[in-house]
Amino acid sequence: MKSISIKDIAINTLYFLASMTILLGIWHLISVITKAEIPSPASTWVVFKELVADPFYDYGPNDKGIGIQLLSSLGRVSTGFALGSLIAIPMGLLMGSTKIGMKLLNPIVQILRPVSPLAWFPLGLLAFKASDGATIFIIAITSLWPTVINTAFGVSSIPDDHKNVGKAFGFSKWKYLTKIMLPFAIPHIITGLRLSIGIAWVVIVAGEMLSGGVGIGFFVWDSWNGLSLERILVAILIIGTVGLLFDKAFNGLQNAFSWDKK
View: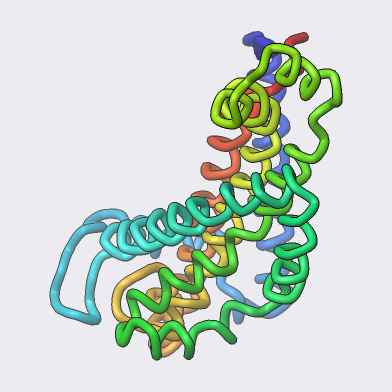
């Protein structure tokens, strides 16, 4: 893995701060143009401080702190993402390693991949009889496709030299899987997982808006019903920040397993 110097960290931090300054400037300009119909960063900051002052309060089913809402969403995303990955990785390995697997499964992938999570939600309710189960279902079914595709691509691009080594040493199928296929495909698998977690985090908001209950998506919808645009903007910033942290975590994992050792 390529080492990162203190200078690189400082430069990246400066770029990030400059990017956030641009975002805040555009936001403030929009607030001025709309005559504060879109709340300004300053007024949103006031509401943010109120929300994080006591993030874990619980005054009933429809009155919970932002921390409880966020943790509830993270739990659903983690469960749905894990279930989707357990399906996606073996499916991608099968598609990438055999022509029969590719011909049989690729049409299924291409038909189901574009389907909106909102279209899956009624089926999830029918199958699981509960909104939580339906939300986890739509996360799993919509987030697994990038992992399937990237895993299949990684396996199918294994060089012939690697395959010949396995044949020359008489590797069993299990040894070939663990010593050649998976090590070569891992960077591609992590790339797929990185894309999948992003989709999972996007889907959770739509799912919780439909299902209600507890979660950051429900918080957005409830804030809209309460005509609190500041709370909606706070939720948007939290959703974006968590998404950024997810991406950075998988980017670090991807770099750790990258074949580029420069």
